[in-house]
Image (cartoon, rainbow, N blue to C red; front, side, top):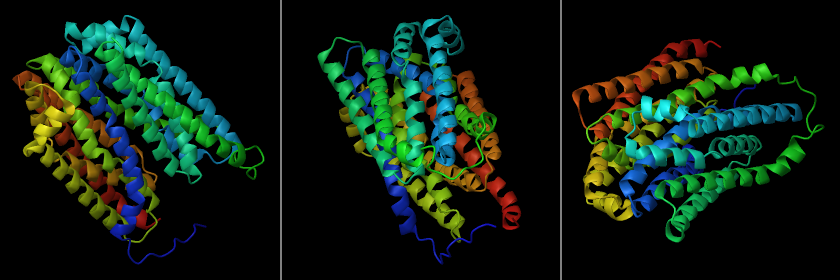
Amino acid sequence: MQATPIPSPNLSQKRIFALWLPLAASWLLMAVEMPYISAALARMNEAERMIAAFGLAASLSITIESPVISLLATATALARSHQNYLMLRRFTWHLMILTTLLQALLAWTPLFDVIVKGWLNAPASLHQPVQLGLQLMLPWSAAIAWRRFRQGILIRYGHSNLVGRGSMLRLLSSAGSATLLAVLTPLPGIAVGALALSIGVVLEALYSHWLSAPIVRERLAPDAHPRQAELGYKELLNFHWPLAASNLLYLFTQPIIAAALARSPHPELSLAAWPVTSGLLFISRAPEMALPEVTIALSDEEHHQAAMRRFGWLVGVGCSVFLFTLSFTPLAEIYFHQLIGVSSELAAMARLGVQVALLMPLAMASVVVSRGLLTAQRRTQPQAIAMAVELAALAGVQLAGVWLGLPGVPVAAAGLTIALLIEALMLKQVLRRTRPQQAGL
């Protein structure tokens, strides 16, 4: 028998805001990491070349880590007993080994030539720094996997506020490392960027492990829970793989864009401008990334769908206004030239990309709220299908842009926006079709 939820006559926007704010703040802390490092590289020798190489190496490393991203959700949902913890730990170790091996193969074997030189057609001037960046980011995926596993345990047992502390430590570590390495060492920019990212995530993983250790000892001890049905490895894999597949599809957007930029007019300039553009776009979307968890947490409340749709719309509007301010007003000059410190030509291209993407936050808000609603209904397969459609739409726009010889950065921004709008409409249709079925459950 299902427990009857406590009635709530009105799910207020104020209540949603109180739950959303600390999670959004954590995402924002992570979002400023890449722009800060890009700003540090912009003040070093061969700035445009190093920024382009850093963006390409980071996008490839992030794609490799895609199977581990959903460990946060998996651990939060399943870390209920000692046996579950042991199975989750084993599964996490397997993912750490697998993703580290993939990174090593890409960084030190002919696979680099196949993907970076062949598939992505990166300019020859970027080959050596991109390979060095991939080599220095070897610990990246394993550190991300472990921290998300341990952070899931923190969230499961009511310590989500500690996750934000880890994000702050990561930002301070990566930003501080980038600054010190840029000022005090003769390292090239790609080495500064790759080492800064690696140092940040490794320290955050260690910190998350330390914070969660008392919970593991006390709440996940062998005798801490009544005997429960054991979690099998196959069951765990079946739970995790749809989430991982969705993340993998999403992360393929960056290599697709990188491949298109490498074939666009002025490829090196476009590859250097895109990390600046995408960094600002990610900052604008960061507050929205907390919406799925808020939606799931409030899914038992009366009229929660309408309330979350309204809140998501307000967040989306606010994020779009933020993009407008930093691309169409004098603040753009301050952000791109004084804060980021890139050249006038690079700033103009990055600014145009942001201007094209003004509707992206609104589309993203609709997408993430719909994902939260579907996850609360235990319907994850439609999300993976919608993500595949989004990826296909993005690839289609990029192919058209390359064929027409259009500037790469605005085409990439337009492609992302169009693809998200298509996914938003698709997920809303799925929710409309499933609503009567859910009401009858």
